[in-house]
Amino acid sequence: MKFFNCILLLGLCIGCGEKKEMKSITGNSNEIVKLMTLDPGHFHAALVHKTMYGNVDSTVYVFAPEGPEVKDFLNEISTYNSRAEMPTNWNVASYLGDDYLDRMISRRPGHVMVVAGKNSKKIDYVLEAVKAGLNVYADKPLVIDQEGFKKLKQAFKIAKAKGVMIYDIMTERFESTTRMQKHIATLPNIFGELIEGTIEEPAISKESVHHFFKYVSGRPLVRPPWFFDINEEGEGLVDVTTHLVDLVQWEAFPSEIIDTTEIEMLSAKRWPTILTTTEFKKVTGLESFPTFLEKDIIDNKLNVFCNGEMNYKIRGKHAKVSVIWNYRAPEGTGDTHYSIMRGTKSNLIIKQGEEENFKPTLYIEVLNKLNFEEELNDALTNEIAGLFPGTSADKLSSSVWRINIPDEFKIGHEAHFAQVTQNYLDYLKAGEMPQWEVPNMITKYYTTIKAYTMAKANE
Image 1 (tube, rainbow, N blue to C red):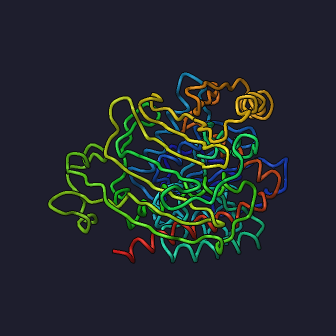
Image 2 (spheres, helix red, strand yellow):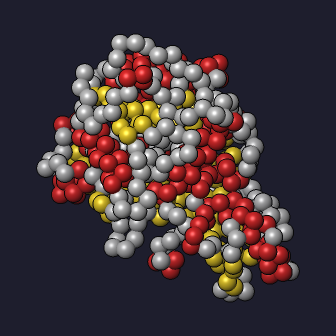
């Protein structure tokens, strides 16, 4: 057993011999939440701690195998603590060893397991946590294959019986432009109703473009080599698409329960992004491809199946989701998002290209122009002002309007982690989640796994 960068609190000691029984926090609004981070292999684990929370204990309990990933996590926490602007004051109690999972389960110094790392292991971590009566706060995706999906359904049953919560970190619900698109889609005078659509022109479509080389917290992101192993990370169709499928459900049918029987997968495909050894070194620091990636190397180049596209119906409405990974974004750009919701009166379109200075921007493409400007101004004054005060609209042409959300609401991807974490903490305080959250999580992963299975079968 090895401790480092560790604060030992004798009454809650991770390494001591006395086992402490955990008291459930769900439904107890006065109890302080204690977080345990398990095997942090992805930088999202650290982003959860970029902000302090009023009802969260300042000690972070970390259980992990020794290695560069946990060191990166601990270094990131140290950076947050020492930054000049709004520093955090996390204390870290770390246990490093091969029996990290057993140690966390047996000692349980916290109430909530936070996990962001190898997706191949995540569902097993989740299962063990809920069996022990622990709440789970996990980075997406929870599962990457059919076997994992079976375990997920089992985990939700156990969690319900134990009275604990499983929640995946859906940061994209807090992006201001997406929230605005969702909100306007509920305004019948402006949007009308969501059309049925076709495969060529889906009722709702979302495309996400990502990059292996990027900056996080102001520094180049170093990715672990396993990130490029589809057996560990999962393919694109089951990874980033988790966010997009979630948004389709959340925007098209807000606060409604979507059953798996209401999903009809129509088509799905997958393709690789090809990396040279030089590019791989740039993002991992390794001089060559490790042996576990040999299965994906062709002509000394790594083929990463991180791209995918699915066309499906959800409650009879056509939907399209696609994800694309490039090596590096052009200078001054970054990850981008495109989305369209087609209504009977207008289309709501999010673009993030050069014209938008690579910042997500919402446009309204008017189909029924009768009294539209009057209706839009009324909505800006009333319903929209209640969501994002100060929002305005520019008329770009006779049929196109740009919605201008004040910059104060455009806080960026990293800051969304604090928002979704606080949302989860509110659920814990209330002792329950909205009735649609769990069934829609199950349907979300049913959809991604269905697409992956179809894409593989079609090759």
